[in-house]
Length: 170
Image 1 (cartoon, one colour):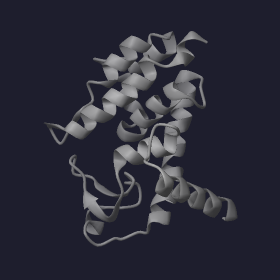
Image 2 (cartoon, helix red, strand yellow):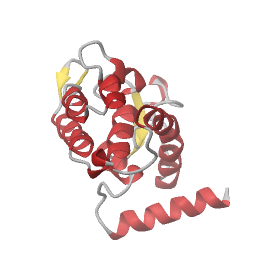
Image 3 (cartoon, rainbow, N blue to C red):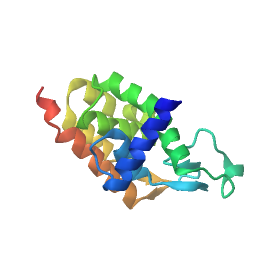
Protein backbone atom coordinates (compact mmCIF):
# COMPACT_ATOMS: atom_id res chain seq x y z
CA UNK A 1 0.00 0.00 0.00
CA UNK A 2 2.88 2.39 0.75
CA UNK A 3 4.33 1.76 -2.70
CA UNK A 4 1.00 2.51 -4.41
CA UNK A 5 0.63 5.70 -2.37
CA UNK A 6 4.16 6.77 -3.38
CA UNK A 7 3.38 6.11 -7.07
CA UNK A 8 0.20 8.14 -6.78
CA UNK A 9 2.07 10.97 -5.05
CA UNK A 10 4.80 10.99 -7.72
CA UNK A 11 2.27 10.88 -10.55
CA UNK A 12 0.34 13.77 -9.02
CA UNK A 13 3.52 15.82 -8.56
CA UNK A 14 4.58 15.24 -12.16
CA UNK A 15 1.09 15.93 -13.44
CA UNK A 16 0.87 19.20 -11.54
CA UNK A 17 4.39 20.37 -12.50
CA UNK A 18 4.10 19.96 -16.28
CA UNK A 19 1.53 19.15 -18.93
CA UNK A 20 0.85 15.49 -19.53
CA UNK A 21 2.81 14.17 -22.50
CA UNK A 22 3.88 10.90 -24.08
CA UNK A 23 6.93 10.50 -21.82
CA UNK A 24 5.28 7.60 -20.10
CA UNK A 25 2.41 5.24 -20.70
CA UNK A 26 0.39 6.42 -17.71
CA UNK A 27 0.60 10.10 -18.61
CA UNK A 28 -0.14 9.38 -22.29
CA UNK A 29 -3.28 7.40 -21.48
CA UNK A 30 -4.39 9.84 -18.76
CA UNK A 31 -4.08 12.75 -21.17
CA UNK A 32 -6.27 11.03 -23.75
CA UNK A 33 -8.82 9.64 -21.32
CA UNK A 34 -9.27 12.85 -19.36
CA UNK A 35 -10.23 12.88 -15.70
CA UNK A 36 -13.85 12.69 -14.60
CA UNK A 37 -14.37 12.24 -10.87
CA UNK A 38 -18.12 11.67 -11.18
CA UNK A 39 -19.32 8.57 -13.03
CA UNK A 40 -20.70 9.37 -16.49
CA UNK A 41 -21.90 7.62 -19.62
CA UNK A 42 -19.23 7.68 -22.32
CA UNK A 43 -20.08 8.15 -26.03
CA UNK A 44 -20.38 4.37 -26.47
CA UNK A 45 -22.94 4.23 -23.63
CA UNK A 46 -20.60 2.70 -21.03
CA UNK A 47 -20.54 3.86 -17.40
CA UNK A 48 -17.08 5.38 -16.84
CA UNK A 49 -15.20 7.18 -14.07
CA UNK A 50 -11.70 8.49 -13.43
CA UNK A 51 -9.32 8.00 -16.35
CA UNK A 52 -11.48 5.67 -18.44
CA UNK A 53 -12.26 3.15 -15.69
CA UNK A 54 -15.28 0.96 -16.47
CA UNK A 55 -14.74 -2.33 -14.64
CA UNK A 56 -16.38 -1.51 -11.28
CA UNK A 57 -19.05 0.96 -12.31
CA UNK A 58 -22.42 0.43 -13.92
CA UNK A 59 -25.43 2.37 -15.17
CA UNK A 60 -26.76 2.94 -11.64
CA UNK A 61 -23.50 4.76 -10.74
CA UNK A 62 -23.87 7.43 -13.45
CA UNK A 63 -24.11 10.83 -11.82
CA UNK A 64 -23.89 9.26 -8.36
CA UNK A 65 -20.53 7.62 -7.78
CA UNK A 66 -17.68 10.01 -7.00
CA UNK A 67 -13.98 9.26 -6.54
CA UNK A 68 -10.91 11.28 -5.66
CA UNK A 69 -8.00 12.10 -7.98
CA UNK A 70 -5.80 9.64 -6.05
CA UNK A 71 -8.39 6.90 -6.49
CA UNK A 72 -8.58 7.67 -10.21
CA UNK A 73 -4.81 7.35 -10.56
CA UNK A 74 -4.79 4.07 -8.63
CA UNK A 75 -7.58 2.70 -10.85
CA UNK A 76 -5.70 3.75 -13.99
CA UNK A 77 -2.50 2.05 -12.85
CA UNK A 78 -4.44 -1.15 -12.12
CA UNK A 79 -6.51 -0.95 -15.32
CA UNK A 80 -3.39 -0.60 -17.46
CA UNK A 81 -1.96 -3.97 -16.35
CA UNK A 82 -3.94 -6.22 -18.74
CA UNK A 83 -3.30 -3.85 -21.67
CA UNK A 84 0.42 -3.77 -20.83
CA UNK A 85 0.58 -7.57 -20.77
CA UNK A 86 -1.24 -7.83 -24.10
CA UNK A 87 0.96 -5.17 -25.71
CA UNK A 88 4.12 -6.85 -24.42
CA UNK A 89 2.94 -10.22 -25.74
CA UNK A 90 2.23 -8.88 -29.22
CA UNK A 91 5.23 -6.55 -29.57
CA UNK A 92 7.87 -8.21 -27.41
CA UNK A 93 8.46 -4.81 -25.78
CA UNK A 94 7.88 -3.53 -22.26
CA UNK A 95 8.62 0.17 -22.76
CA UNK A 96 9.23 2.81 -25.41
CA UNK A 97 7.06 4.54 -27.99
CA UNK A 98 5.72 1.44 -29.76
CA UNK A 99 4.76 -0.10 -26.40
CA UNK A 100 3.02 3.12 -25.32
CA UNK A 101 1.08 3.43 -28.59
CA UNK A 102 -0.04 -0.19 -28.64
CA UNK A 103 -0.88 -0.30 -24.92
CA UNK A 104 -2.97 2.89 -25.16
CA UNK A 105 -4.81 1.42 -28.15
CA UNK A 106 -5.53 -1.84 -26.29
CA UNK A 107 -6.54 0.01 -23.11
CA UNK A 108 -9.09 2.05 -25.04
CA UNK A 109 -10.50 -0.71 -27.27
CA UNK A 110 -9.59 -4.05 -25.76
CA UNK A 111 -7.21 -6.65 -27.17
CA UNK A 112 -9.79 -7.89 -29.68
CA UNK A 113 -9.19 -4.77 -31.77
CA UNK A 114 -5.73 -6.09 -32.63
CA UNK A 115 -7.32 -8.92 -34.57
CA UNK A 116 -10.12 -7.12 -36.40
CA UNK A 117 -10.85 -8.78 -39.74
CA UNK A 118 -10.34 -5.62 -41.74
CA UNK A 119 -7.16 -4.42 -40.03
CA UNK A 120 -5.11 -7.36 -38.69
CA UNK A 121 -3.12 -4.94 -36.51
CA UNK A 122 -1.81 -7.76 -34.32
CA UNK A 123 -0.48 -9.72 -37.29
CA UNK A 124 1.21 -6.61 -38.68
CA UNK A 125 2.87 -5.91 -35.32
CA UNK A 126 4.13 -9.47 -35.02
CA UNK A 127 5.54 -9.28 -38.56
CA UNK A 128 7.18 -5.91 -37.88
CA UNK A 129 4.98 -4.16 -40.47
CA UNK A 130 4.55 -1.03 -38.37
CA UNK A 131 3.22 1.08 -41.21
CA UNK A 132 0.27 -1.26 -41.82
CA UNK A 133 -0.32 -1.63 -38.08
CA UNK A 134 -0.42 2.14 -37.61
CA UNK A 135 -2.75 2.59 -40.60
CA UNK A 136 -5.08 -0.04 -39.16
CA UNK A 137 -5.08 1.68 -35.77
CA UNK A 138 -6.30 4.91 -37.37
CA UNK A 139 -9.57 3.25 -38.41
CA UNK A 140 -10.82 2.96 -34.82
CA UNK A 141 -12.27 6.44 -34.42
CA UNK A 142 -15.95 5.69 -33.85
CA UNK A 143 -17.91 5.41 -30.60
CA UNK A 144 -21.64 5.01 -30.41
CA UNK A 145 -21.73 5.05 -34.22
CA UNK A 146 -20.17 8.52 -34.40
CA UNK A 147 -16.71 9.58 -35.53
CA UNK A 148 -15.18 11.45 -32.59
CA UNK A 149 -12.47 14.11 -32.96
CA UNK A 150 -10.87 13.02 -29.70
CA UNK A 151 -10.50 9.47 -31.00
CA UNK A 152 -9.10 10.70 -34.30
CA UNK A 153 -6.45 12.67 -32.40
CA UNK A 154 -5.69 9.76 -30.06
CA UNK A 155 -5.35 7.26 -32.92
CA UNK A 156 -3.08 9.66 -34.83
CA UNK A 157 -0.79 9.97 -31.81
CA UNK A 158 -0.81 6.23 -31.08
CA UNK A 159 -0.13 5.40 -34.73
CA UNK A 160 2.65 7.96 -34.86
CA UNK A 161 4.34 6.33 -31.85
CA UNK A 162 4.15 2.96 -33.61
CA UNK A 163 5.17 4.06 -37.11
CA UNK A 164 7.80 6.71 -36.37
CA UNK A 165 9.50 4.97 -33.46
CA UNK A 166 13.29 4.52 -33.49
CA UNK A 167 12.70 1.06 -31.94
CA UNK A 168 11.78 -0.26 -35.39
CA UNK A 169 15.39 -0.32 -36.41
CA UNK A 170 16.55 -2.39 -33.44
